[in-house]
Image (cartoon, rainbow, N blue to C red; front, side, top):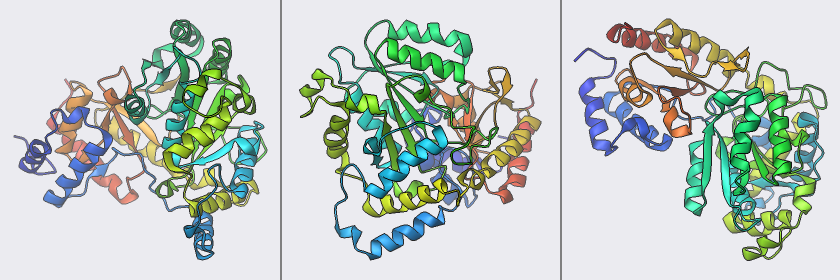
Length: 439
């Protein structure tokens, strides 16, 4: 066996002991556990690109506000299920300032991360009409959202959007929506894992079809304003975060604090329901909830059942962050721009060493540099490439678990790679390239 940066016998034994039948199909958390065990056994630190977690310090204004709130005694008090007033006000203003959409603060709900917001959206959105109970994933996407639907016993359809960009999108979407059993559509924008960003034309198509077929769009804005080709940092000024909310009233926005504000550990996100949808009555909701009004069922049915509210102190922290952002005192976009700069550098190193980009274009424009990028290597499937890279101290996830049809590819996250590791990455990839020459 060729010499590798991580002792091959250690990697082999840890893979065997993991019980994973196929490392390339492992979930993100399973892969994290395996890499942790290899690091401990080998004493070597990996270039970790498998998990999309922030690599920056949390927004200080939020931390300080939480400390003040905790000292005031909020830890012993249950928060209101629909959120503290200060946070609801700032969420509504944030949506106006950075998306240019008007949403009543009443329909701005803090959740235990966007994960809970998604779960609540499925619980209500897929139960509005008998026989209309499936979700359509415009993939690739976040694998755990499909897991949520499996846990709920709900069905879903999926397609890889890469070959259906622009004018091709309408016919593809309509081929699913015309069947009459799709209740919700979900996608992320910018996209996890491919980092593609929908155009206004595409969002208009999604919005107009959602209205035509009475379908609810769940827009996952986990990487809010992180399309660094545009400066989205000035409150109340264009350009704004692109959104389907400009083209339909049938929308729910999931806005995360994890990446844009580096606040992942506090597990707090924002669920924003359009004014029109929140007020809409769906008689079939009475099968599961005490009210047939969508917004009421969401808060006092779904969110209440899932957690009975969101961490009290974290709400004060997020309220303070949003207030600073809304006032122009905290440029959150600039604070995370390092991800784009790091992605540009890392892409160049992979390409230099024989790798190729999988998703590389946004229609006719080069893909932005951001939180993720996607790679492949000639002669390897994505699943085999995952396993082989472990011997070289590099970890990522296979695109095959994200709903992508590009099974040769991997998703690489830049957030946990530190500046001092860049030369190590270059050395390890050079060794990989030498051991696996491209014919």
